[in-house]
Length: 288
Image 1: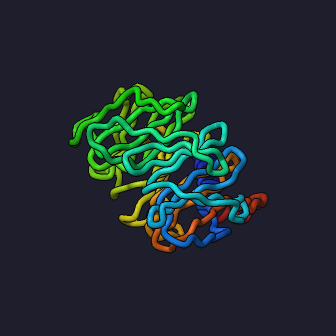
Image 2: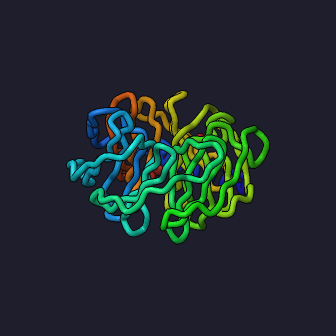
Image 3: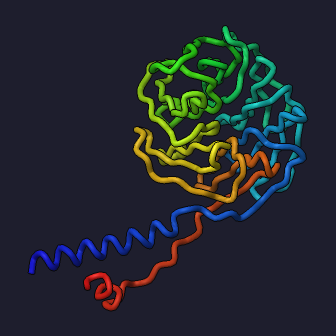
């Protein structure tokens, strides 16, 4: 009798798990056309959305509903992020640029990086800025002073090979989309190697949600992979995207993707999961 009850309990759990899994992927709810391909995307504390369009050296600013609020020039912009005060940072032309939320330039600082190029950018604790270079990470103060650089070219722990995106978690740890090595490299805020985990394909975009889910994306297979901050896989999605180079989310969990080949920003939300009570007929079907 005990065995039969155990099987019944497992069956109920399995049934609920299968329902949840079927509803897990977010749904496309909006498509915002951009004049050229967006490379990077960021969400501000007020839920507005910023995107960089490097083909025309421009930042575009949208409301959460997709209304264009403003735009401004940003030289050779590749990466973008927003700090806790709503200030906007972009990278390009070997520099980091800091703007107000309406595009007024606050400063432009050369990145003291032995390899020159700059790509992804994020902010960590105390709004410290971290920038991806060709083979490493550059740490910059909110005032624009370079204070640290780490990384060399290669595949050993601590090395990077054509990294692209960078993101920070709530504890300040950093996650780098190490494109050339098809892996995620995890560092402390001071550059100590914490972990590396490998991916099914090369990835460019990376984002860590407030609840600790690491999202990675890229053009290789258009899949969105998800992990815990310790690298445990949480599954993957095949969404309606084509070459999504970057992604971001807001505090409510809405996801935004820089859909490069469609020249759009695409907005996805988690729809409510339909629920109903399990009937005895449900259990009997599982219990047979």
